[in-house]
Image (cartoon, rainbow, N blue to C red; front, side, top):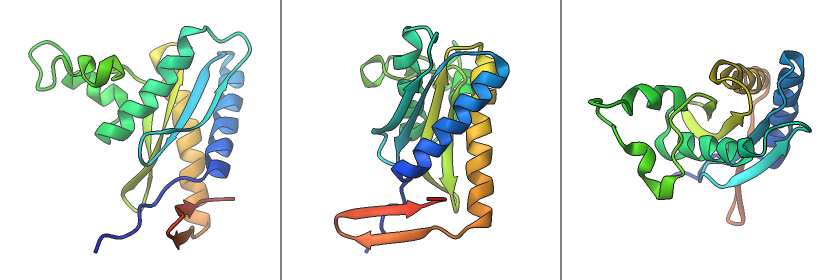
Length: 161
């Protein structure tokens, strides 16, 4: 029998978006931020005032890409170059796969429980903003033991609530 799927909660996703918004403001970079759950579906999203409109879909798709491949988008970038193992992967999944930085997995006990995607700045800025949220989440996890709701209607790991 398989164990229940650990998942990031809406409350935790909102906290990650808030941390990302704070990091983006500190850098002076208006951006879009998306958090997806363990299945790759959008859980929380924000587009800051002044963020370019194209950043919205890119942020969502960066988070989606991370979750379906369990790999950071900047790592996929190297693998998607001409002659590399995954060349052309960005054309899969209806064109939703994004292979440049700004997408990072959210993990608990070495399991992917969600992902964050950030878009609107340079690749380095997007990565820094996403990493700020993931670092905060990792710190919360080391300070608190998440409770796992094992009821059939809701299989979530609560981190932070």
